Length: 167
Image (cartoon, rainbow, N blue to C red; front, side):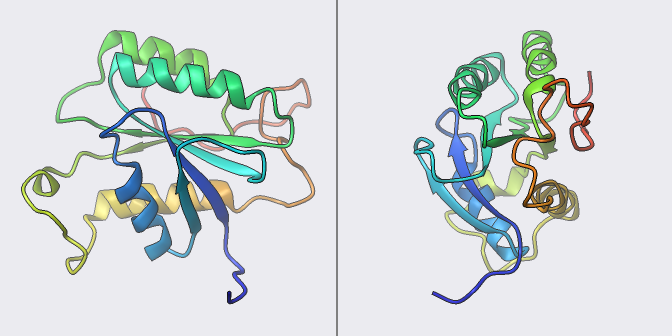
């Protein structure tokens, strides 16, 4: 396997249909060594949880986060994939607020309507707003290797990466 100098992450879906497979493939396109798994097995340092912007999706993200927080060397990032156009439901926003202090980063990933109607869309360029979200995730993953979990709220004074999810 060739050496990889860019950021790396394990991508874990919180709920089916969240777009985790699509996000994993797209992260590879922007230089992230990303691998999708059903659960975290303790080897990855950075875990990107992928969920939909629904109350149920963010509830599953809360449950996954609780399990991951038991592992101090893991940095947890959250990708919230819009499940359609319009604002995030109130219950989803409330759950997201409870997750924020525990995340190394939180990124919204836009809804891409055309992907509902095609089997595969790998030959076309990514939508600009989707690509911007990918680069925000990649930047959050590209952290100093000597400070595992430093961005997590732990009284260390470190702040989470820029969040782009509305409160």
